[in-house]
Amino acid sequence: MRNVLPAPIDDRPLVLRDQAGGVLTLTLDRGERFNPLSSAMIAAISAELEAIAVDPSVRVVILAASGKGFCAGHDLKEMRAHAGDKAWQRDLFDRCGRMMMSLTTLPQPVVARVHGIATAAGCQLVSMCDLAVATESASFALPGVNIGVFCSTPAVGVARNVGRKRAMEMLLTGEMIDAHTALAWGLVNRVVAPAALDDEIRHFTDIILARSPAAIRLGKQAFYQQIERPLEEAYGLTSETMACNLLLDDAVEGMDAFLAKRPAVWQGR
Image (cartoon, rainbow, N blue to C red; front, side, top):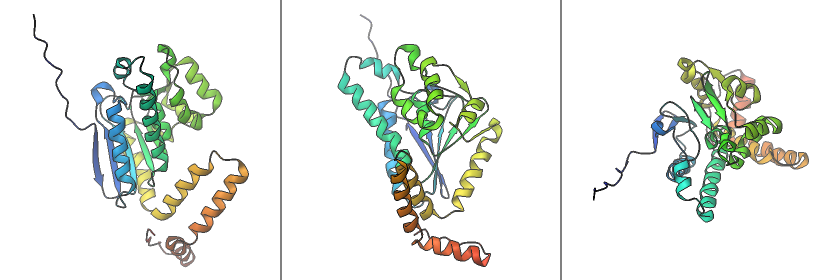
């Protein structure tokens, strides 16, 4: 009988972390497999976001990926291995949903750095970031229907970016859309040549770093709280937010600096 060797253990970090000044880059690092959102990858991203949320040295986050593409979605091999186990599947999607939502509750803005494919839950990941910059060769899809698995959870984020008819087109056909279509539909903010990707992201991060961190933190929280509420509730919530914002030291400093025609010096409180 032939001896069967166990599969080698891959002990590389799933997510790489690199910080330069106030900008922290998280890089999904299973590029050889298009960075699938396995249960372990979801846990690794969640742990990083939890740490970032309480780190005042981080002002803005870039979510990037290694290899030829951004993210191909969930790990189908792992999901297939648990076929028939509804409890396991439900736990996977619940944990993924919490990770996705944490991108919006994170105090710091998150910029997706997209190259290659972003499909299924990978497309969802782009949609849940605050900003997204893609290369001209990037492509996006919700292709689950092609294999009999409708992309219901990815649709939550994508439909909040692109609108119902376009989301349903992606969901019902499973077809790829190119980067310029994603831009026109509202899934990404900018489309650039690959060589210009980091410069375009730096354009956003430089602007964010020059703004009041306290105001951005408060404003991001209010944006996501109000966006799904009825109009009257949304105005009530944001009126309270604006009133609280004007009590910040940075608001006083910002108005004084504007009136005095001088640069503001943010306190961050």
